[in-house]
Image 1: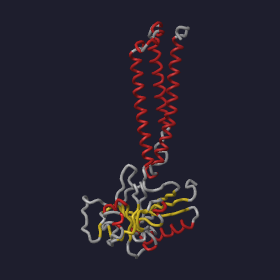
Image 2: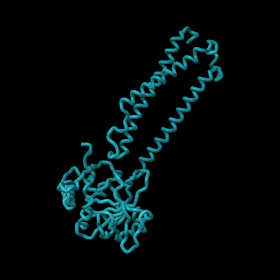
Image 3: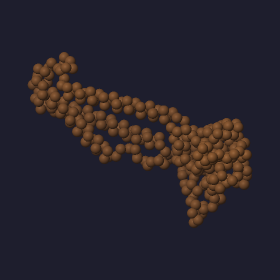
Image 4: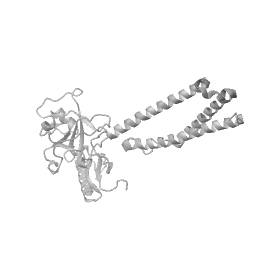
Length: 336
């Protein structure tokens, strides 16, 4: 361009504009990726952990990034122009013979840019690989096409649901009405929904066996469920049966455990029919007969193994029903 009469000012403008164009193009692509990855991350996390849009960049963030991109683009353009114009014309025309014709600073700049690009690409590759693996992990339950509602009945003396029996009757009516509504499929309730908290835990004692020692033996998580809770989340039944009308209030206590708890009792088939209890939870001293074993649910997250869990039927454990979550396998689009 110098050889055919371009002025030095024109060269500076061209190089600055080229750098700014590249910076802005990269910034637009990066901004779109920020928005997309934020929405993706929000979809992978339970709504109870963050509010909508919490992981999406704000307008202030975009403004700061835009200023930085303009500054970087302007700086790169000026550096390129300075290194080009400070050389004699004959050096510029002969620079195509090899790398030796390039200034040291320019070679360092290119090397740094390539190194940063490789680091960013490697990081992006690791992130994408982690996301693919995360999507492939089986959490033990189905979350698609489901309606989930968490509610608190209250336990203060002034509440109409202060008594445990009143809360149990409320849950009975809620499940009956859900069954009568065509928009709901299998519907159940739980005291602790997956990924929403670890819940209470205590040692699982077996009738006729020496009790374990807290801190040395593994504790078992305690959960109260009812209705078609496992069916609503499509949790597989490994052995035995689910809760039904036989497990009503006043009937012999029944329990369902997960596979992790069954392994502590010698295996799935060996666990059925055993009688267990957790003495220091809800003040219940009665032993409960294990009537079923369900697959493990990863309540603590996709990357952590499932803990031993025992499930009781809420008509037999109404004290734990002050805060419950209703879940239904919807037969219509949950978004409407």
